[in-house]
Length: 173
Image (tube, rainbow, N blue to C red; front, side, top):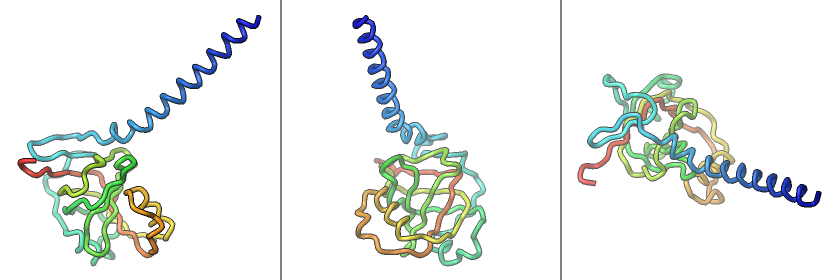
């Protein structure tokens, strides 16, 4: 009877360990799985949906300065990736002068590589402006690897919910 009980106990413990470990592996791989390009060219990779050929680009600073005109509109822009979420690549900051634009991904269905900071990027998506609390700003800072205790700001968050992101690689790199 004791051997049978120990056998069941050992089976349950092994089962729990297996489930726990497979969950951890799944979480760490999630970002990598969702950061797969849908298209690769000689010097670019596209994430999300296919990049439109007829996109009319607006500079990031222009979008921020004229945010009332673009709120809720589908826009295309290009610039430099300033920072990327280091946990999964689930958002990045697009350099736009004093007020960077936070880029998220439609329905959280795709990410970009976590090492994409500094790369040139083109993207399309819906432009939004919303309030930014100090708590949110600290959370975002932590996600990109900064010290959240140094963040002391609230205000507006400029955001594009991207449907397509094209990362352009430098030739010769």
